[in-house]
Image (cartoon, rainbow, N blue to C red):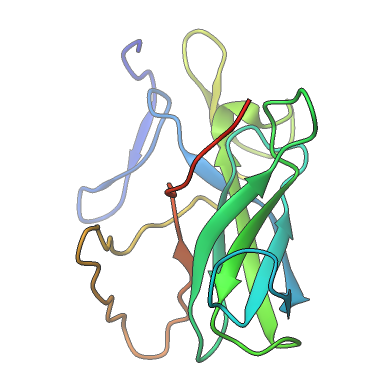
Length: 168
């Protein structure tokens, strides 16, 4: 990738925005309720989130007091773009959840913010119209683990990949 032509740092010297670095931004957020199980073997319910129109969606969900794990994506016949993402969930059917759909910055529409940065080849890397994804911790597999956040903050979990199989 070409050298960055613009970079912004915070007061501690940490890079915040760079014209040379693609990122993930929140394109959609909302709420839903868990439904009868459509994925997973033993989970009592499933969560579904619409991701239609996104290039490479990463979905974060929060179900207070319960867990959720990425379980699948739905693709229309002949398409390589997912239309929804499903999670297996430990919550009973009808439990409220909140979701955030992140997509990579180069998929952003043009001219949609007061301040935008682009790579030298014209790909958007930042727009003030969208919240950037902020990763505060990583739990890796195998073995998993637990993330202990700061008191008073609200966190959501996002799975960047999933296990499974595909068919022709």
